[in-house]
Image (cartoon, rainbow, N blue to C red; front, side, top):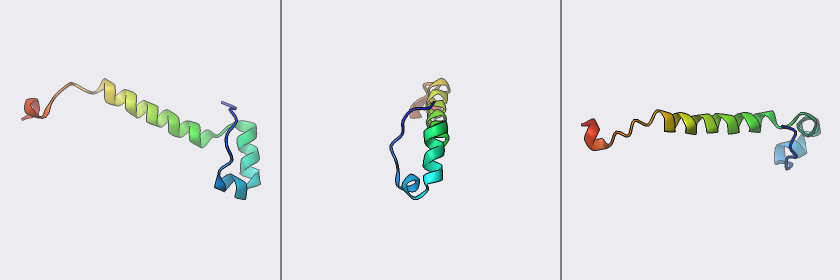
Length: 56
């Protein structure tokens, strides 16, 4: 989780935030990635294979 991150505009303006990201990892980015992965997995899991013709 403590992977090196590139410095974004917000981090350049907020050295305290940049220090925390460097020390603890970018929790917001990791959370976003996990949420996106969960949505993709849920989409695959809940895909019942119905087409428009089957639904009508």
